[in-house]
Image (tube, rainbow, N blue to C red; front, side):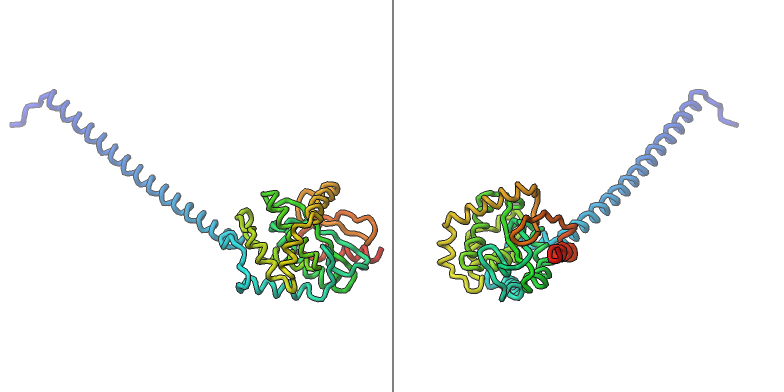
Length: 276
C-alpha cells in the first residue's frame, strides 16, 4: 500500500529543500569571497614587496642609505679625498678665494653653498677637467663666491663659508673648499659641526690651524659672505652652483650650463672668451 500524500508534509519537504539550497549557495559565496580576499592580499603583498625593493635600490643608488656623517679625518675615505684634491690643486697659484694665474685672460666666478650636493656633483665630475685644461695652463682663474641654498641654518652657512675663506688668508682656501665638497655629508643631517670644520682644516696641506682659527674672527670674511649674497641676487641667481664667465677685468656674463656632469659646455664658453 502506497503511503497517503499529506499536503502539509509535502510543503515542509519543499521548504527544507529550498532552505538547503540557500544554505549551500551562501556557503559557496562565502568560500568564493575568502578566495578572492586571499588573492587580493597576495597581490598587495607582492606590490608592497616590490615597493620596498625599489626604495632600497633608490637608496643605494643615491647614497642616502649610507652614513649621514662625513668621513673622519685620517680615515681611509678622508685620505682618499685629500689625495684627489692634492692632485687637482697642487702647484696652482692661489690668492684668497681665487685659484689660478692672477693674470689669466678669462675669469669664471663660481657661486656655491658648501653643503650643496649639486655643487659636489659639479666639483667631482666636471671641475677637475676645467682646472686641468684651463686653470693649470694659466688661461682661466676661478673665483669662489658664497650663496646660501642647501644649508638650512643661516648661522651654520655663515660659519662654514667663513671657515673656507679664512684658509684663504694663507692662500689655501681652495684646498678647504674642495675637501669640504669631497667629504660632504648627507644634506640636512647636521654633520657640519665645529669638529667637522676643524677636521677639514687639519687635512689642508701646510695650513697653520692656529692662524686659521684667528682668521675666522676677521670681519673681512663675514662681510665677504654678505657681498657674495648681494652679487648673487643682482645677477638673478636662484640656485647653486651658478656661474659668471668673461674677460678678466671686464663685465662677466651669466653662464647657464645645460648640465653639471659634462665639461663640454663649460669648455665651449671658456674657448669663446679666449677667442674673443
